[in-house]
Length: 278
Image 1 (cartoon, rainbow, N blue to C red):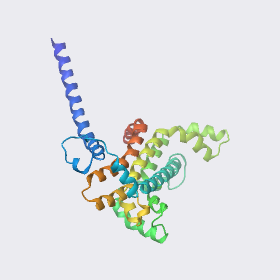
Image 2: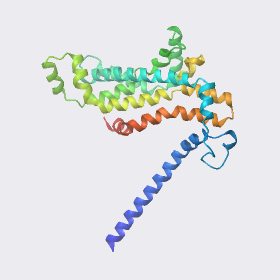
Image 3: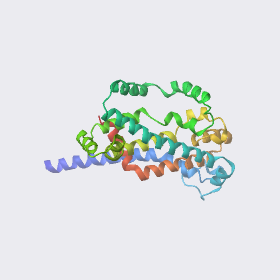
Image 4: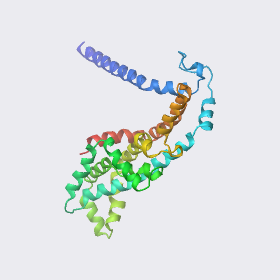
């Protein structure tokens, strides 16, 4: 009887856990489903109690692609995300390797100075960044949008912590075999920190894809707007045309969903590793 009661309690406990998870998942997913559904609705169906439209309309997507600069916004965001992600992958991993495996005077001071930048709010950096972009003629350019995110303190910290776990004997053996320091970094050390690099790529992609404040300030002409900035201006133009706003938002989120579906294991593992690796 006691065994049966114990099993019953475990069953009830698991059932409650799954029920809470199901409710939480529904709360999280429902706005997304409503957004996609609204993008296929006509204006008079928006306030209908039915989630699904009476008939799926593609006219909203046709209007978005033909009468707005969405494809241009998509191009600008794609260029920014690809370039910044490649830059972060190279420079963050290189600096992390240097701080973790090379010995030189002032290394700890440099590392602490890099970490200190994580404590500075982005809003406080906007004015210095803008002055730099004006002085260097980077307004309304791809480089002007990208340069604040081309190397990150978080990425340096993350890769350094992983490099600390790479055995020094392995690197010394490669040096004895004749590899120079660049070869040791690229051929021996870098493959050992693939989980950190995967997490860094994903976080950087999501961060730059959703960036709004800095692209809004530095990109002053319509043809240099990223997707978040473009949708913001578009929503102001169409005011209460929610079917068009939801259409633009649906198109903007599709690349993020594709990245998540493809790399979901790396995303979850990256979250765990970035929080536990020390």
